[in-house]
Length: 67
Image 1 (spheres, rainbow, N blue to C red):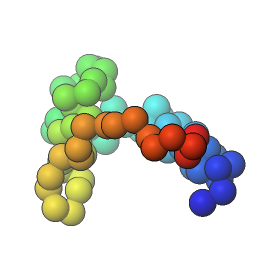
Image 2 (image 1 turned 180 degrees about the vertical axis):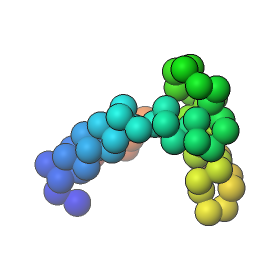
Image 3 (image 1 turned 90 degrees about the horizontal axis):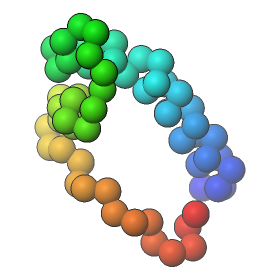
Image 4 (image 1 turned 45 degrees about the horizontal axis):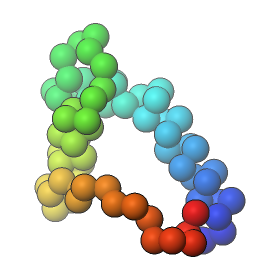
């Protein structure tokens, strides 16, 4: 993938989460109304939306040279 395309996609995803993440978490019953997103609520949303129901692995440093 072109690094510029990956960066643009990352910016779009970040913007979508900034705009709608709290609404999605609230609609899924993960977040009470008015509270902000945190790591735990993000993990709960990920677990509910993944097809296999598993949480994503802990983030790791990207391999050298990809960024």
